[in-house]
Length: 124
Length: 513
Image 1: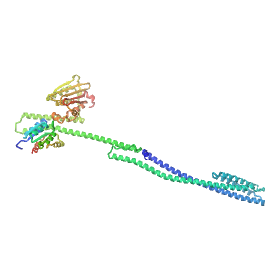
Image 2 (image 1 turned 135 degrees about the vertical axis):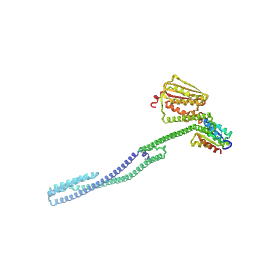
Image 3 (image 1 turned 180 degrees about the vertical axis):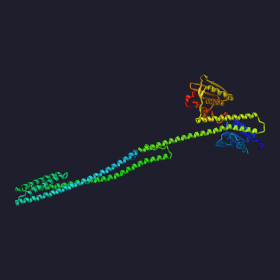
Image 4 (image 1 turned 45 degrees about the horizontal axis):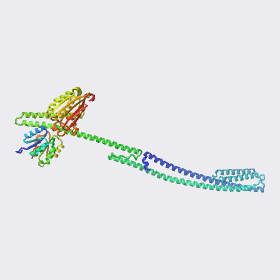
């Protein structure tokens, strides 16, 4: 792990899940920022330039797929690692997330060690 | 010919064909018989002519002989004066009788058209014979041959010759006519034979080609049907009889096949749609179960991590996190129950527990238990029950409770700083409950699918307002189970009203449910 903590942007509308995941990530040594919807997430991405984004797909105002696509259209955010988080567990859902521009995909319920590995792989 | 044979049935065509051939055959036989008859006639006429000529020659000879004898006798009489014996006289008279008979026979076989000649000959011959008879009878009394006898003889011979010539002329004429007839019948026979062969061939070809054309059309149709073109129709109008019936049967078969295929396809489409709906339902169930499970597993793992740390545990925080796990667990249980309810309804296994119940009690109880939900979003509730009209009804209490709970919690969920009104009244056979809010409302598009399982006004509704998207599907199905219905009125941004009407006596409406 780097000396500088990795900054993670967690975008999750479900209050319980957002609270749980942000606390666990903080405990794991990450610098966690949270957003509730896609709109807010894009603003934060541009403003704070996180090292990695954990993006839920079912979001109010602007869903995860749209958010990922818009992020990829912005030159500044083109190479930003985005990991999709979703309760949709089908293979087609994974492909849909990858097509929208996400680098990786994690299914809820989250396997936390697996998620940490995915974050590390994305940041490297 | 093609036109009318095409219009005739196959059987009629065969009949016609056979009859025509039989007629031709019969006419051939008739001409042949006519020819044979003419030949016979000709032969007969020839024989008669020959016979008549023979008889005439015999007669001529007999006359001549007799005249020689008489002349000799006459000369002897003059010189010797010898009497004639009775035997000789008798024999001479008999001879004359025989000549007379032959004369009669000649008359019988003389040709028509020779009657005048014969009559003349007969007259002179009869006269001669009577003169000769006189001569013989008077011979012994010194008789002499009369001078007239010589004249009569020459006259008779003259007439016999004329009769002979006349007969010969008539025979030639008649044989010419018969020859003509024979030549004609021969010609007719040959022409008839040749033409019947030609006509038979023509009929055969006509029959074959017209039948063949019809059969070809049938074959083409059958091939088109076989290759799957069931919209093709064989032209029945130009066919007739059995082939028309066959063409009709083919067309009928094609139509029925098309209908059957359409039905199968429709059934397949329905089955596919049902299958797709099931898959979607399953995917939705999976999604809905995963969301609370994520919280349960996540918080539990986190608490376990905290326990294994050496740091002091924040008991308040720990308790709160445990409550969160319980809350999520309960949410999961509700979801599973809802799914099971829906599955039971779908498979027709939902049982009704019917009982007497006062709907007022149920409504009040539900509103009481859900009062925290009302105040959660700063709403207030008006309960207006027309108590005068209420009486005990016969229905499934638990389902009624569930219907009111779902509608009421929906109203609370989608309304903020607003007003929720629950009303109830009854007629002689119907209980009407309405739940009205002045919340976010729904567009017409949203209203259309709101009773379907897992459908919420928007994909994001669940995350904003919670819920599984099963509540209204269950309300709709339960209302139907209880013999009633649910309807809604809604305007976007202004609010929603759900109206449930249920029969007060389910038993009388739903015997045996």
